[in-house]
Length: 311
Image 1: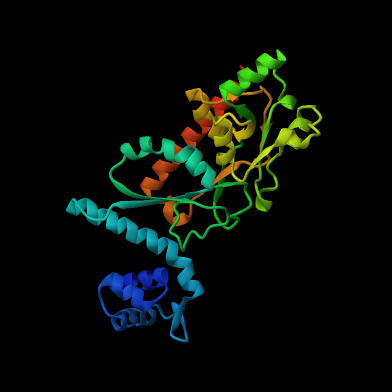
Image 2 (image 1 turned 90 degrees about the vertical axis):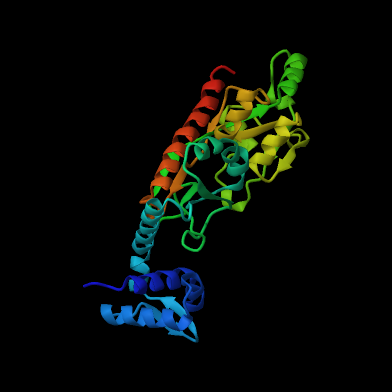
């Protein structure tokens, strides 16, 4: 059965934007034309694609089922059209991950990926779980733990660890004063992960895991930061020792702005995981970014791990 391409375009646009009026603007036609095209498509298929309630439209179950495949098909058609014409809209890549990982690692590293690709539109979203892949057109999501997106294909990437890090100046100060470095005497920086991230270790759990009783004096007048990136910046400033993910610490250790205050480290309880929706997984740009990201994340985490063996 041959279906109208214009009808399919009208259906995909209306389902994605949520209204015939918005689809009409996108397709440069009238809302009545969009409605007529979709009616014709529904008659050809013998089934409804939208519920029409109080001037609003809501995709039916049948419509929702085919939307990812239809969207991917139109993206492929647009790519072919661009290639044949030699110009047109750039490919788009939307990346979503926790804010600390964006500011603490991704933004300083992604330039190597961008420079090696054909020009494309890049959107980077720093946000906590859970995210809406369809509404925000997200192609790639990095999250902590396997449990956020059970209805998607979520793949474990790596299990990082927490390392005690501080500035070289603070390390030298306490090493010289004590002749043998002792974290119990150093100012400690706490990270308040928030109620949604209770599985991240604290200084208490770190000391217990290393066989040491935690300090009793309120963690040596502890500073508290509400993100791992903020805690890392406080450590770079020389204000104390922070427990930091290896992924975030690697660049600072390599540049010499941080050192490991101890060779002991604590593996995180959950892996970092990558979620790519089905329609995005078929796009070459997304696949290439996933390959680049996975390789470079592993290199950074392993760099810190290897450095800890020499601490």
